[in-house]
Image (cartoon, rainbow, N blue to C red; front, top):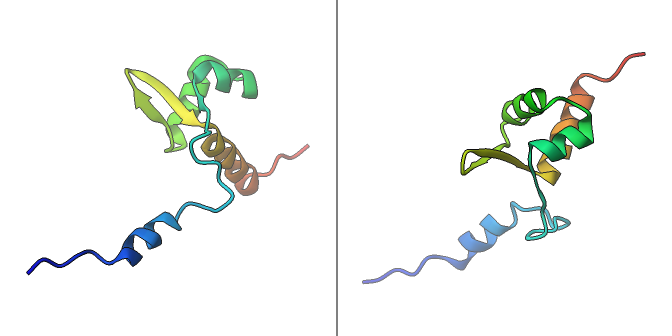
Length: 84
């Protein structure tokens, strides 16, 4: 007796992605792009990407999805607002 998986499981997994995300059109940011955006040095930008927990290592290089990077910056800002 072969039991087919329920189609609900596939639908349920796909709803984890927000409906407004632009899947397939994400930019991968390297260290150089993060440096340009933040003004940080390459070493600091690399550490920041790794500390976010969202970095992707590919062929000994580090990348982060653009949306993940901005979400991480927003989390940092929310948890530690800038003070003048």
